[in-house]
Length: 200
Ligand code: VGL
Ligand code: ZN
Image 1 (cartoon, rainbow, N blue to C red):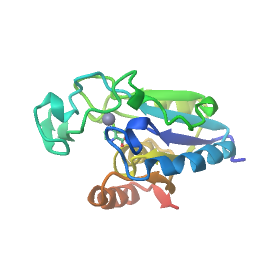
Image 2: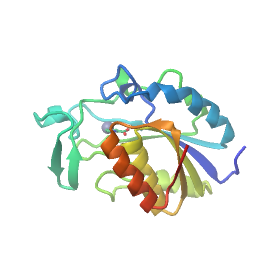
Image 3: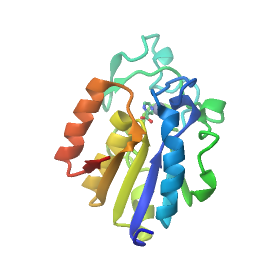
């Protein structure tokens, strides 16, 4: 068992990010068993859930654009995704094997139509908080281990923001999967520069 000031943050282990989903990450389902077992090491377990309204501004279909193209939002560049994790849909549900019962807190993000939120801590405008930082601080948590989907987007942005907030952050890559190789390489550099420990 880890110390009481350590938390496991499980990012977006949802049907749409697993094979068969709308924004499937290769091997996304392979990590579920390992995450379930890993939960037993932590006294604090948090899950995040990507949770978009229909017609969300991060969806290519909302811009009549091609999925995976990039557009300019008021807050900066934004990748346009296939419709995914629409609130209440089967795709937005957690993977059926994930031990959701072990979660003490579930943070939903990306619920505002005009702003995406990769990070579990701040929306993509980089200033609107989700509340997770305050929740963890109030519980006395100082160290975070992050796992889940996808390494190059939501895990990456969450890890970098957490490090900026002053948490000690480890990303356990064996229990993460990425969307694409080029964004993964960039994410690895960004996480290292932010002081995140990236290990297997
Ligand atoms: C994610 C793209 C869009 C993620 C969420 O969980 O990494 N990626 N929404
Ligand atoms: Zn999303």
